Image (cartoon, rainbow, N blue to C red; front, side, top):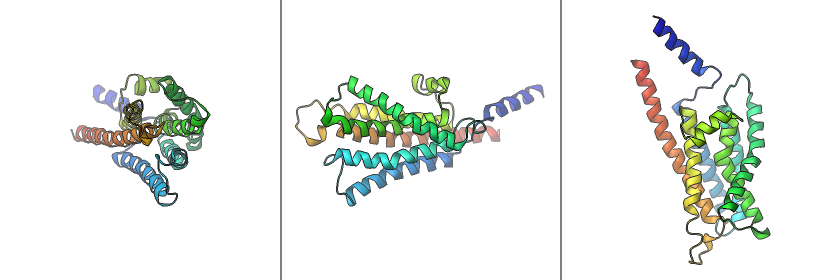
Length: 232
């Protein structure tokens, strides 16, 4: 009996101050994020007749306009400690964190060889904001400035629940995709899509989408494991 009470107390303590995230919640969040990307490209292609190759600035701007609000508004729902942090406070955290993440992304890109100059300024600006929406904003909306959670997710890559998988894996997918997308840039092929930041943007978007799919696989496995343990 004492052991059972301890287990119950531990389980209750682990859920206090958190919003529980179900498999359906995770699926809906990823579905809406993917839908936002699909709608963005559809509008760019069918209404404005542009794409990342023909007009990277306008296309990235459109992606930011649609994707940034989706990322902030959706992830703020699953904020940590909702009793202490209201929904709108989480939204404000996301809005404030967006440019911070963009600065870090732009700095990292320049350090790794992204071109610098007035002609590239707007391209880098919109690319970095989109990257921030994929990687930095979700963690800011959910965990704020909790250094321990940031270390766990991005330094040690040790997600421990559904919400962590939702944040961690798409962010890593985005960064890996952008890194892989940068490989063709220095090659002497003289293709228009090799210009900054076209192939990097495509790589980041594909990486983000693959990350969402992988995240859902982990969430499904984790959800089955939790339901199996409950039955036992």
